[in-house]
Image (tube, rainbow, N blue to C red; front, side):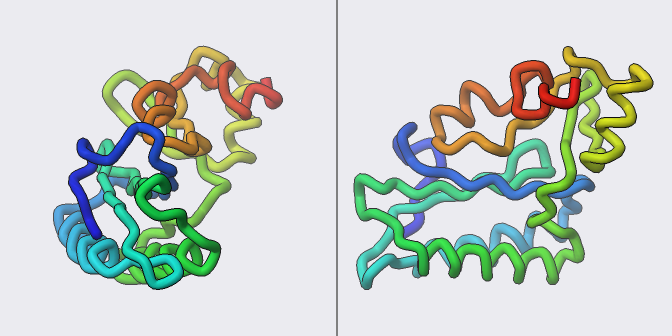
Length: 160
């Protein structure tokens, strides 16, 4: 059962899928259409899930589930991965690549591979003060408060 993202509780569990390029208008239409259909029918152990999604910064797809409504199971999470794979294939952007880091330079969002990030830290073009997008947040509340953080406050700080 799909609900509006602003109506889902802050304690809801989330998953963030990122692209290394901005979504086009066509991409957004595909994401909206496929996500709406999937979330309207998403279940765990034959019980409806209260779920939502949101596109952030035209580069991130966030899926949220209110586990107080009904807990989610492993099979249901696997089905959501199938959704992300389907979207990725349709829009020709890999939303499952965990080896990219999105970061902000003023109003511009850029992407870099983890290996290139390490090199850019060494040469000074990226610093501990660079704002990165923390895709490891686990709840909507964490998303609202800790999605954009300094690199020094993230798991990437071990590369500084």
